[in-house]
Amino acid sequence: MPDTLTATSTPVRHVIVLGHPAPGSFNHEVAERYCKTVRENGQEAVVRDLYALEFDPCLRADRRPGHATGMSADVAHEIGFLRQADVIVFVYPIWFGMPPAIIKGYVDRVLGVALTPKDIRDHQTDSVLAGVSLTTLSSSATTRLWLDEHGQMGSIRQAFDRYLMGIFGMRDAGHVHFGAIVEGMSARFVREALLEVEEHARKVCSQIAAGRHSLKSAEAMAIFGAR
Image (cartoon, rainbow, N blue to C red; front, top):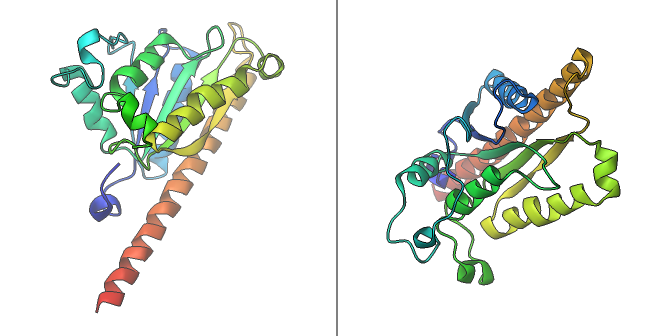
């Protein structure tokens, strides 16, 4: 996240991490609509399409936190985007009850590059991610009701979303899930889902803008009080 001195003057940036292998998929449409809405609200959006980038999700033995002698070039490139992020957006399908391996690999290799088990134990948050908002737009072929009946959505929210926010010091900007995403969906169903994406994107943009406004006000008061 931009440091406090520059946070109120730099553009608000959303980094969208997309984890679906098929171009033209519903998840790609979701990412595109989220970006479009963010830009219409005067904020920046950057998409990291992990499959298109051929991102390697495998964490190698010599790249584990505390074992690496340096950061790999691809991870350093991703960290460069995250350093300027106010919002990280995960967009992915739920497969076998969990996010796909490429998303988990992004967490392992990029988000977790510097956070050791000792840091987690001692509640040391990550300097790059602390204060950044995390939101997720997920999908599944099954219905939301089916996932709830089997405890899957609650598990993902607790074991993935809230866990990551807790150890990295990120803020909760919500998780929107779209169920019954299958081939042959009606155009109306897709339109309604994308309208929900727009609504959520506007909500997140508003939250971040309000936070920026509060920070500007605090800075102004500090300057005024110092006179």
